[in-house]
Image 1 (cartoon, helix red, strand yellow):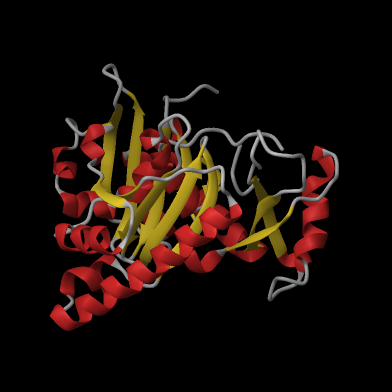
Image 2 (cartoon, rainbow, N blue to C red):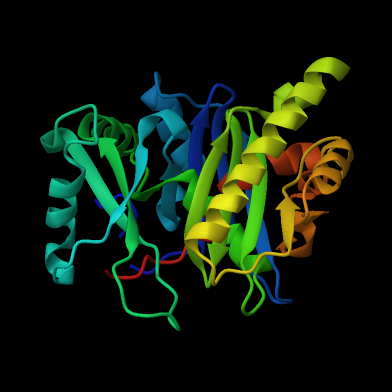
Length: 314
């Protein structure tokens, strides 16, 4: 199984993510009115220590009818930006392994890797360009695969949060414009910049949505400053490295009581900051609880994973 992918099954993807709460299950498919129809989204009582509970969840929800994907945790992989090797496509991953072998804190033979292209300016001069190398320890991948195999859940893809967020950013994209999207979950913040459906920049912010929700006034100010500084640095880096990408605003993903952060960012950045409402792109009529920002923040990345498209061959 590659890090990113691949009987006719139900359209769309079912996203499965384990957390302390249980197994997060989300599924969406193209709807009749242009929105993505969410058919399932919620927490199921299951955990990695009890494969029988996973198997029961799989049977109860008929997961064998779906194409299933799961996301790696932030501590389970590394994303490295490296110069793209000048080799034929069928030799790319081998060449990339040699390129990153001294950048890992474990032996390259213990790594599962995949690559994501960072396309250069198609109107610029021909020159070398960069790629993302995504690396995870073999034992991390093997344990995840074994867990779902033992539960008889047909896992087809192991993905990463950056790509799930990229999928949602694609819904916001306008011709000739890049999309900057900032989200928060219980592990921290994630800023992505996409252009033409491709991921160009990904930065993590060490502030979770619970940090923001539970902070007093002084600590909240500290968090806001930290987030603003990371955004400033990231946008400055983007403008230096990818001058052909134009960004006029930052989208802020669903977040409880998000208006204070939105206003602070808007007053301290030269870009406008807009709130994202997933209801503009997803039909939640079957799961009305997702109309609330509290639930949208919990299921933001799992819903993004359900929008997965097959990765381009490199």
